[in-house]
Every structure is written in structure tokens, then in C-alpha cells.
Image 1 (cartoon, rainbow, N blue to C red):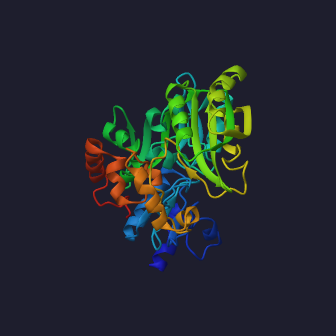
Image 2 (cartoon, rainbow, N blue to C red):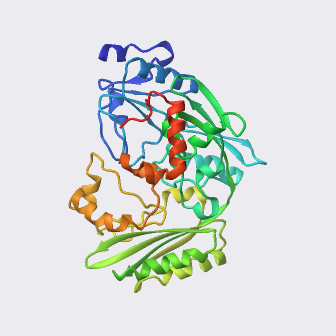
Image 3 (cartoon, rainbow, N blue to C red):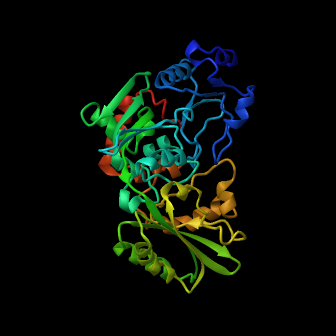
Length: 390
């Protein structure tokens, strides 16, 4: 097997990294997991993605496709192969008038934001510097502008996909509409999406606020936050992270206001300052959208606080079990997390593929007829199941 891995076809010369290669140490892990794949392939074009896929299939290796490597469950397979799309990171404005942009799957969101900013455009991305465009869109695409922009998949107009047999296909509303439907949220099971055509939004400066308040443990502050967000301007998106600080319970609120001026920002944020029993910290600014990616983390005001637990209304899913002990770092162990989680899980009616590691979660990610259609399309476009590594 190892000899075969070293025998690269001409189109993949220098593109296959095995454990003996010095580059391997920089490529074998993701942001949450450290597995030991037998090979990491680094294609730089659609043709090379097709060649890489053929290479993996001919050797019968389990396959993982990586964009930014920011998937919480990780999913890399020890002894298998990773097709790493990080070299496919180009961003192009196809039509400024219609705000249509082409983003390759390996592009990271800071680079996307920087490339679009001179045109006055933005995509409502995950807004994390480690997240890649491909994985985010394949799982739905939620970000700090979601109440204004919606999910990223709401704005995908076309996609370039390499299917299981190595064929490259352009999917849009007229050509391969079923495939286009699948790659907008269930793309991991139909092929390797190498690029998306996305309708961006007009955006200049945004308002950003980081608020820390002490709250009681009776849930009143969270209900107050939820009630306000139901009626708040659509330009405002906010999330809450809970963390302990000594004996106190802290709610850290991150708020982003699209296209905000000073007055609009103040009006949107002021009700959030009244959450809880007392205001502990406040940071508010107007900033260019790309600068959001380097904004302070939710716990920056309280560096000694315990590991936070997100209660964002957009994150109703079980955290993935990862090899680096992510769950154990949050609690005393997975059993404790399970005990704490199940009383809450019944209050949630959805999940995000990018945060789930359990196969049983399929019905929550793709409920009812949606799940039936996803299953049919995965079977049609990937009959051998090579993209569905357990």
C-alpha cells in the first residue's frame, strides 16, 4: 500500500503528502482532531481534484475531504486519505451589478472578506478565521449576519462539483438542479464541491458590540434576550455564551449590526445592556466587515473564566466527540455532558451538520421529506458511499 501511495500519476506529482514528508506535520490534523491519514492530497485545480479522487478510489482508501479543516467532529480517518482543498482558494467577482461572486472551496473567510471589501460586497459567512468556504456551505452556512443575510446556502446560485466517478459537473437551476439542491446543505454526500457561485450582499461598515453581564441562574436573562431578538431590527444578529467566573454566571453577548451608523448601532444594542443583574464589560465600535474576523473572543474580558458553553439560538446541536478531549475540557467527561445536555435537547428542533458527529443525528439535521430526498440523492450521485465515511 505504501509503495502505491508514493507512485503518483504525473498530474499529482508533488501533490501527495505521506507521513515521511516534512509537510505532513502541518497537514495531518484539523483544528479539533489529530488523526494519522496515510496520505494528504493537495490538488490545485478541478482536474487535479478528479485525479486525486481516482487515485484514492483505485487504492480503496477511506476518504475525507477538507476545506478549512474547521469541522468540529474532525472526520479524518487514520489510515485513509484526505483531499485537502486549501490550495484552491481563489475569489473572483463575476458580475458586480448582480453581486455574483465565485469562491473556491478552500478559501478562508478572512481572505474572502478582504477580496470582496473593495467592491462593497460581503457574504454572511461563519466569521471565523479558520473556517473554509466549502465546508461551511456544505453544512448550511450560518454567520454573524444571519438575520439580515440568511444562511449562506440561501444565496448559492451554482456550484462546480467533482462526482464520485471523477466527472466535473456545473450545477445550477437549469443544469443538474437536484445536485444544486443537495450541495446547499447536504453537499458532503454527493461529491467534492470545488467552487460556489454566490450572490453577495451590499455591505460597508458594521457595528460590533461585545457585552458581558452577570446573570441569575433562573433563565430570566436568556428569555429577556430571546424576547428582544424576536422584535429587533433584522440588521442585528446576536449570540450569547455562558461561562462561570468564580461564583458568578456570566453571559457574554456578541452583537453585529449590518450597515450601522452610530445612532442605529446605539439603538440596536442598548436593550442588550439591560440583560442580567449588572453590566460588567462593554466594547462597541464601527468597523469594516473584514475586521470582524479578528475581533475579540467572547471570553476576552474574563480570561480566567471557565470554558464557555454556547447557548446561541443558532447552535442547537450536540458537540462532536473529538480526539483532543474537547468535550472533556468542557466538563468532567462525556457522561457529565450527556447528563446536562439531554434535558435541553428536547427544546431544540434542528441541528447543524458541521457540529454533529453522531449518525443518529441525521433525522434532526435533515428531518422528514428533506431527509428522504437527501438519502435518494446521496445514493444517486455516490452509489458506493465513498463520501460517507462513518
